Length: 220
Length: 220
Image 1 (tube, rainbow over the protein chains, first blue to last red):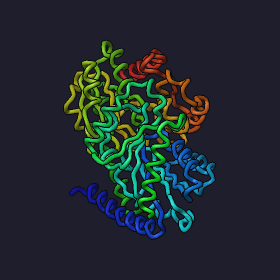
Image 2: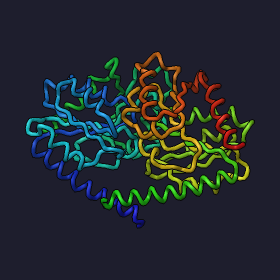
Image 3: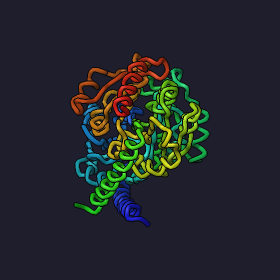
């Protein structure tokens, strides 16, 4: 094994241990956690703002915002009134479990039902790093094109839910939904696939039903 | 310095050495090289197909296609008739100089004027890895949103040319071009910014003039 591969494996092993610590803490505190991943610009923050607005009267929500740089996303999330922590990775292309562990010290974890983690916009790196979450949600926006699951298979094979976002723009693009569904199900037979728009709110009822069902399953 | 940081630095140093070897080889052979980077789905491949169609009668072009997985992009490029090599990084989030060095053995480098490198779709990692190129081109598509330069500054501060792609869709999105230009010029005062569509071909003449000027500058 090369030095590089060995160090990478050591780092991933350490990440798994900390992810497991996070997982135990979330379980003990009764917090349901989901990790939201996608390319830059697939619409994660807009989608989360609309989701939080619709869930915050029912659940006590906290958010960890991951970005290489800036706090623009945290400010947008904060406008919903829920507690949010911005993590700037300072160059790193993904969040890891230790960043989550540190960020948790800035959240009221004794008073949370749901923790949402918005990962760095990247369709490659975040897929490798478990954070201690219950659920992985990946967004693929219609403008990105229907070839993404073939080109970035790990992200789609490791997600629990795939949201096809910006579906309101469907008629402007040459995007074959049937083919994407077929390829993604070939990678991951258990994945739930939904179509959604954070502008027209198409698909939001189905998404909210699904996430509430998952939250209740873990919390009961 | 932590073990992780040190190993990363060693790897980057090694990459610089190989990038320099690539650079010398390109200079010796009189090949102009540009490295095209963006998020997944910003339109790199479609843009390159249209660029190659318009340049291939004037220059002998070769292409290196970088993807985590699959050969779909190489097949699209091959349809233009120019020689192309697909590099699958097998998980890695960017191309590095040694991947380019190996790929060159599969290209007719004694009979090339221009080498185009299409990097892995990723707005974070590829920015750190010099390949030996003359020019870095970054694409930002209108559907991705105007906050990307703030959130992924290294990519925009290290590029020579920024192409705002899918400009034909401008009226469907809330994208502030003036603000993007201001932020990007704040990061990088030398960057050339152009608007382009690979569907309506808006901006193509300006892009072709610019790239031909840069090619001639290096080759004379």
